[in-house]
Length: 196
Image (cartoon, rainbow, N blue to C red):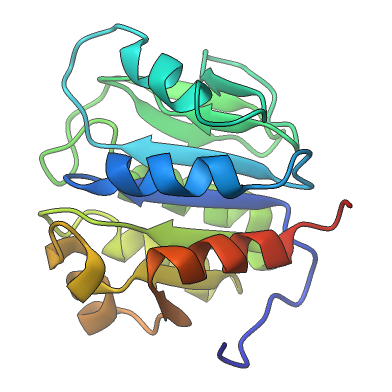
């Protein structure tokens, strides 16, 4: 592992991805300890259909409470949150979620950049941003915002991603702290958990 570490205990992880990232989550989620001492907020590019298939699929892989976000939900540690289809997911200063149906960003709604940037404003140096497999550059600007706020940046090793473009763009455009394989990513997230 690199020497970079959070200066404060992790309060939240924001994790974004696109093509190929669901497979990563299906490997990661079953390995995470329950309870988690932080909130895990997942933003995936997905079809604009409002069904709960993805949330149901992911929740089958973990004992940690997992839910698709509703507007004004309070962000709580020990919970995995999934951005709903066709809304940008933002985190407000009072640590509640808000959903926004404004224009797509990076051709995407939800946009990883939008969530990462709002989370950086709220959590600062207690935030970890993780970017997974995907085919566009969404997430790179959000990672820069997290870095500027003092948070920690992780990207999936592009060679191990189904589509390496998204993590590769982050590596090219941002000073990422860790470039990890999926097994290393699991160990990294476990290392952030303060409960036993």
